Length: 518
Ligand SMILES: Nc1ncnc2c1ncn2[C@@H]1O[C@H](COP(=O)(O)OP(=O)(O)OP(=O)(O)O)[C@@H](O)[C@H]1O
Ligand SMILES: [Mg+2]
Image (cartoon, rainbow, N blue to C red; front, side, top):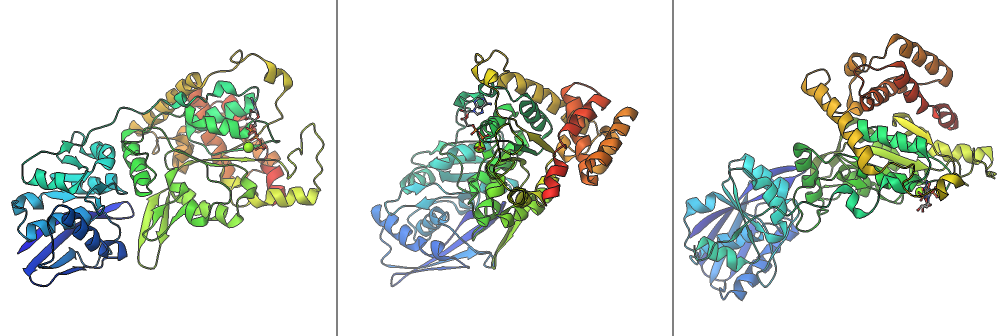
C-alpha cells in the first residue's frame, strides 16, 4: 500500500513543503529512506520503529520505502519523524484515514524512542510557509505550541499540539481531539526585570545620547573610564525601546525559533532583543553559520540591540565581518551545500575605554604610552567607528551624583520611553504619509535626508563650519542630519532647527581623536 503525508523544511528563513511518500510491501523487514536525507533524517527509521514498537505495532513483516520529495532539496533534522511515522501507519493499513485529509495536514515533530513528541526549531517560519501555501491543518509538538499559535491566530489554518504519537493517531482516528495551539499570556513589561534608567546616577550626556539613540534607532558608541556606568547604561537601553510592531515581531520570533533561542512556551517575541556577545565570540557565533546555516548574534539582535562591550577586545576580523551585513541589513551564509540569508538590522551599541588602562582624558593619571593608546583605538576606528552615528564620552561619576537620593534628579525608564515612543510615532507617520521612505531616522536614505532632515539656514552653516573644524567625512554629514532629525522629533518640532543641529554635532566631537589613531 502507499500513503502520502506532508511536512516542511527550512532553507534560511524560507519554508519548503516536503511530500513524504511511503510504500509498504509484505516481506522482510527493510526500512529505506531516500530523497537526499542527511544522517539525522536517516536515523528517523530507528526512532519511528521504536516508537511504533512501544504502541505494539511491529514493523518486522513490512518492507518500507520512504521517499522525501522534492529529491533535490537536502533534508536535515529530526522534525520529519512524526510525518514519517503517520505515513508508515497509513501505508501498513494500521491507520484508516482519508488521504484527502492527510494531504491537507502538515506534521512537524521529533519522536523519542517511547513515542513522545519533542519540540523542534523553526516552527514559526515553517508554519508561516505552510499557511502561505494554503495548508489547512498542522500538528506540532506541544513545546512549540505558543509560537505555532502566533501563526494560526486569526488565520485559516488550524494548529493542533501533541505530546505523543499515540495522541496524533487517536486524533486522526477521530477517537480523541488534540488541543488547539493557544497563545500564552503576555510576557513581562520591559521594566519588570528590575532594571531602570533611574538606577544610573549622573552621566546626563550619556543618558541623553541613549534616549536619542533609542528614539531614532541610531548606533551609539560610549567611551569612558572603568566604572563610569557604560555597561550599566547599555543594559538599560531595552527599557527605553517600544515593543516590536506586528510584522517585526513575526520576523524576530522566526529568527529566534530557527536558532533554538526561543524561550520554552513562548509565543511572539514582543520585546526588542538585546544581544551582548562576549568579545571571544567566534565568527560563526557572531555572523551566523553552521550547516544548515543558523542565525548568529547579529541576526538574533535584528530589530533590537547588538551590544559590543569592550569593543577593542573583539578580533578585528570579527568587526570587519560585521561591516557589510550592517550596511546591507542582511547577512548571507554560504556553505558548500547550502546557502541562507537572514535579516540583520540591529542598533549597534558599543562601549570602550579611552585607552588600555582606561583613564586617558580623565582626572586620574593615565600610564599608557601614546603608541599603546593609538594601537588600542586603531582596533576599532577603521571598521566600526565611522559607521556609528553617535559617540559620547563619559566622565567618571561625580561623587555628588553618586550619593544623591535615588530618583531625586533621575528620570525613570517609563518617562523616557514615553518620549521615545512619541518621537518614533512621528517618524512612522512621515513614512505613512510618504514624506520619507524609512520608518526610523537611522535608516533615512540620502533623498530623505535632504527632504525631511534639511536644517534651517543657520543650522546648515553651523554644520559646514563643524565639518571643516572637526574634519568630518561626507558620511558623517548625513549621520549628523539624521541624528538632528531625531532630536527635532523628540522636541516635537516639524523642521530641523539650528539647536537640533548643534546638539547632533556634539556627538561627532570624538571623530578626529579616534580617526587620528587609525
Ligand atoms: N553612573 C552610575 N550610577 C550608579 N552606579 C554606577 C554608575 N557607574 C557605575 N556604577 C556602579 O559601578 C558598577 C560598574 O559600572 P559599569 O560596569 O557600568 O562600568 P563600565 O563603565 O562599564 O566600566 P568598564 O569600563 O570597567 O567596563 C555598576 O554595576 C554600578 O554599581
Ligand atoms: Mg563595562
